[in-house]
Length: 506
Ligand code: SF4
Image (cartoon, rainbow, N blue to C red; front, side):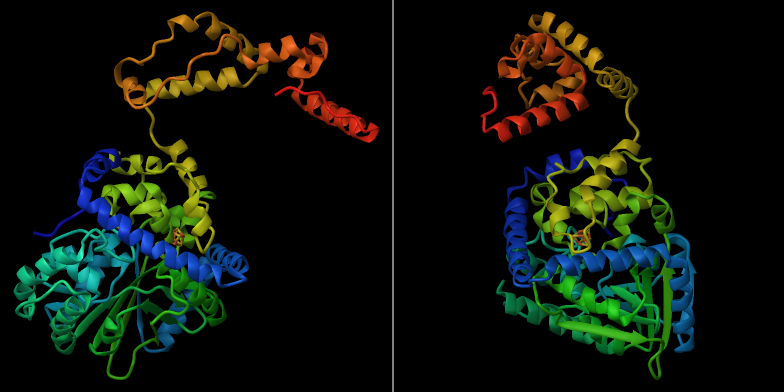
């Protein structure tokens, strides 16, 4: 049976299960720390990294602003080079197009290059329903497919598995899908890689149809670009007679010159390498080959319409944000219930799917807002900003909405806040140590801060901010914040000019 993310519960339920799995946490800790240390070293040795990052952001923003123009240019160039272009508004349409193209070849199987877009639309499952078998050829995707599992990382989909688990999967499942694992297979990385190589080689040589995604599309020449580390992609792209590429419309770059920026940003951010091992490019159909490009929207134009959220479309799927995220490291990728896990998943999935379901509405909260994801993102996506933006759009219970409205009313005016503080202080002995009902979830794991006997405002009025000023002046100052600032600063400056020290206090 094929595993699916469909119908998974909300993030808190998934994460609560995952954090109790000690093996999963150990696997994730080891893998994410290794990759993130390599990335940090690769980035540190490049002096112009921040400039490169700014250039990546600028190119992506410019392309997204002019996407309609560049998409048409891409289509023209692909057709000129002998390829066919298909436009898919959503997952169902893309799956229908690909299934029709495979059926037209008379084949009932295809090999596939690792691709997030095809996972997003559930292509393997849709083709299986039409009697077409898809064979994953990326090593990690092969492990996931053989294990009847779900991917949990963008770059390393089987990151949740360790070597002995992989050996067991190869030993027990490989034979059902082709050449079995060699006798006496050990869990040495070289032995596991060799078993996969032998198994896949038969697939490559027999394949008549290949399916891929692309990391980038270059509008000026209609070229597609795939970056990978194993060489499996190149086998898929060159050997079969029919090549079908499903690519999200946001993967466009205007020119080859722009690609040069991303060929530096992506390998260093994803695998911590200076240069990518296998970079394949192709334009239209090669001799004796048929090429189809399926341009996928599937919610992207709606994301583009959101001024804050649209920055998520800059993503180049490097997975650096996953590897530094403290939440991802503990909860793992399956907790996000989507093919896009981690911080980027928390902002992309709710935007692509909407926030009607409990799962999608929970994702913007799957973060501590620590900002580590923003710091490492090679295209400077401000993920915390988008998370907060989406939290504002997520459905909230009525009681929470009323409470927030009341808090907004109080915080809107300093006098109201002052009165509320005094009322709170009068009632402080009635404040419970533990909140009742569903609110107890908060106090079960946290101590409510104790209310002090005197508010900061009252202390300020009484002591003049510890400066020894008369209370009346301090009161005036407290009421007029902007005036207070400029006057206080002016006073400080005057004192400094006179060579005096300012008043003590806290
Ligand atoms: S959001 Fe940034 S860091 Fe995360 S996968 Fe996308 S490009 Fe990489």
